[in-house]
Length: 178
Length: 230
Image (cartoon, rainbow over all chains, first blue to last red; front, side, top):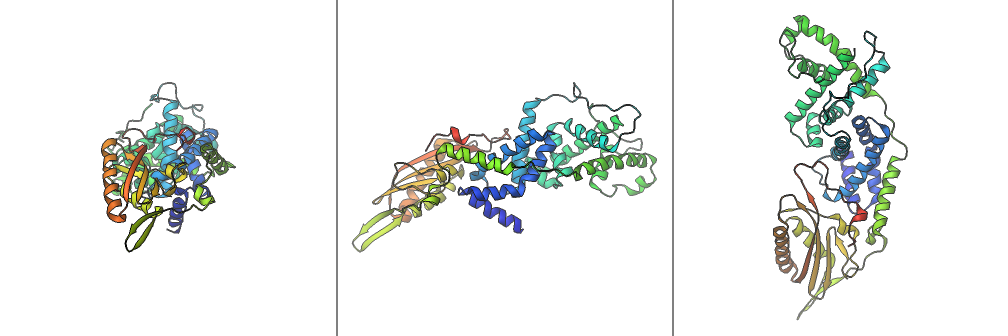
């Protein structure tokens, strides 16, 4: 609650052009924003660029920011939209099955822990961006379904169905590798 | 390879339901069935360690890239510098407040331009179709207007009992600009006259942005450097 109040003060100050206030605000959220970008894009350099773009964009969007959602939700939304746009440009509506098979481990080989983690990360990258975003926000950021709905600006049933679908895809991919 | 989202175990339970149960740590929907069902048990034995991997990835420490915030601030400064203004002018140099004057037989009433600007800002913001006032007014100090900035998105210039106004807005998607701007003018004239007794002159309106496109997730992005100088 205190944090939220402090956020609001910082945002109000930033809205009047106080760049130091915006800097303080950004410091509070740079890690989660970067984390989401990294999980969505899968590449640290791209994630850093996307995070920077998103935060600059947040500064530009300050005039239209109304405290209807929390600062975290707002920043998650800005970075997620940024990443989804990048992903759309990267592979426009390409189906999973064509040329994007997850790398296969040798049949019968026991997947080592490190391999398993890499395999999971690769599998996440094979989810469609629409499935990946809610999954990342749920499993890695621990957001509630309601919060995810607010970030992605979709309904609660849509959140549930996308996450369910994403988990199922993920399990199917992991099973194929094991 | 796309998973069949209706995939069921031989016992009829949907696989997705079991995955949700494991992922969310929920109690089983049908505890009795699950306890005794070999298919459910086998699926859970498989899913638990698999979801353990997801949890492990979630626990991985991610290190923030060094200097990220500094880079963001540098970029913002660059964009602001491209406008020729680093910070709002009134923060650096206290602005001279100008007053409108209303003369009468009993004396003179002086009304600070800030008062008029705040009133206009409120009236404009509450006009149907206006999503918000644009912040560009906040860093824009009108070169030739004697009034200068007094409220975000609004510039007023007072001269005697006359007041000229510039308003910068973000319009709601789907609204007609002529209708919205006529609405703003109408309300501003009415309220400024009624509340201050001053005579509204020119009311210039700039529509700087539009909010709420239905199918574009990213708001239209205008780089500060490309914006016309106020």
